Amino acid sequence: DYYRTIYNKAESAKAAANFAFRILGIARAAAVSSPGTAQDIYAETFEATFEQLGGEISTDQPGLLYLTGSPAESLRTIKEIAAQKKLNNPKIFCGIDLLIQDFVDSLGEDGRGVYFVESDRYDFSEESQA
Image 1 (cartoon, one colour):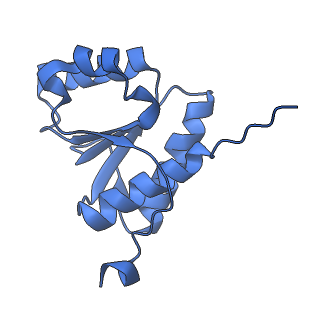
Image 2 (cartoon, one colour):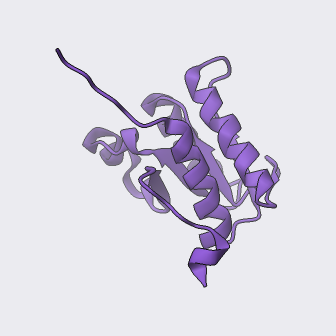
């Protein structure tokens, strides 16, 4: 018999929201996902957690974009943002599953400021920061 357990990626979304708001001090964020996919749930979890913390979800000059799409979708989004420079260089969070050499190589210089998010026992509560 073979049994395998994996974490729920919704925990990564919660960790990302907490890190963005409490550690980086980001007040406005947006999540980008493929509607109707499992990744959409992670975007919703990020947004709900970020708002519960006091942050604002808005596509109008967000300080952070939380990307939940495939490597191709995420790469395209990052490249478009870099080329257009219309979002004022937001921080970008991607899932740890995108931390693969081909993806990083494809980002090139546009990968500066991209965070790869993983949840593993985080505590970004105000009490732990004191």
